[in-house]
Length: 152
Image (tube, rainbow, N blue to C red; front, top):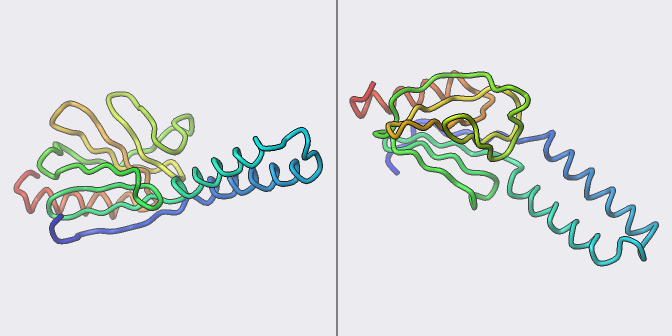
């Protein structure tokens, strides 16, 4: 992966509160109406817990060779080689774009919280947006990596 230039983990607190609220609600329903909710309540609770674990945070690492963004424990990850990046800029997402893994015009986005993001324009014509609470620092780290590669 090369020498790490930048590393940051952003926690999606609103997403965590929503998922915990869902788990508590299902638990109350199981307690009050066990016959109605039954086995499906336990299954739904397990699914919500797994989603909470997977999408509770976004870890971004910039090295001399690549930009890596991964959710939670790292099961869902995207790696972008520095050499495939044409440009980088801080952007503001619309609240309609939401959180999680999203398809956006001309590309994809990873986001766990907030509206700030850094957009990577790629050589293949696509874009990849990374939601972050440190847009200036992330943008600068990617620019530094591009300069090291002689791209920017």
